[in-house]
Length: 301
Image (cartoon, rainbow, N blue to C red; front, top):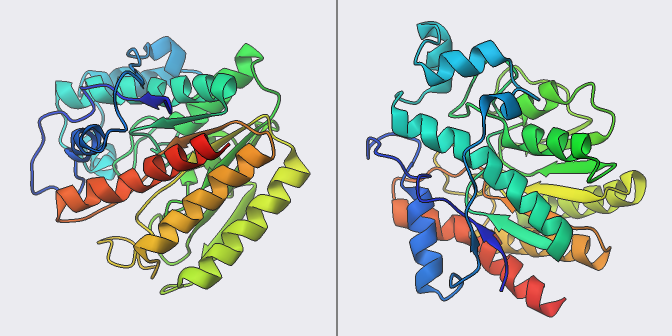
């Protein structure tokens, strides 16, 4: 079956009325299990050490984060209430993306039921993101010599500013962010390629941009691995989105990205990225689109 990466600490105790839906991870897991996509195909990541995470993050920031000693003003940028459960899941999820990437290199495709925390910078957190799993995974794989070139293809509705900042001097990790331009973060950092989209953009125009960009980057960069941030906050009714992409448009996007990579012989690991919805079960189903689509493509290929 399609390899899926998940840990049961991903949904820690958390306020139900918070804009960040912490329960979406366990709800996603339960939905996929009910759908028959989860059987014996779950790979469980271990918690990352601070030393391992320091490949992309300042060790003093990491220690302060774990000890609830981050300056109050800096912590407000994260926007999450501190708890030990939050720290446990925050140290585990980056390894989930790394495990997904390693499995993808073996199997061609793997999906992480979390990840996409692309607003985390080297020495501070932001926008519900504390550790940058995409940068951590890319740098770790490069350091291990498992890959020579990684493409981070970030289709979350918000620009991947932290990823761009951390990997700015890493020539072998190419960062591409296709996002709504007039949206958070308001101070953007330069990715290797940024494509800012207009508010209210619809399916046809959006899919054209995604397809043309991916085709060009696969040809130009010839990556050994694609890390795909399949954010569903591009959806037309997402609380923080500002684009006008339908549910079907998201599925077409995911199918194109995954199928194109596999047809090109390039392994791809997916993360779920952002999504915001007062209907928590609907949000979990929206995040399931990339996994359901990946499963279909996996068996076709």
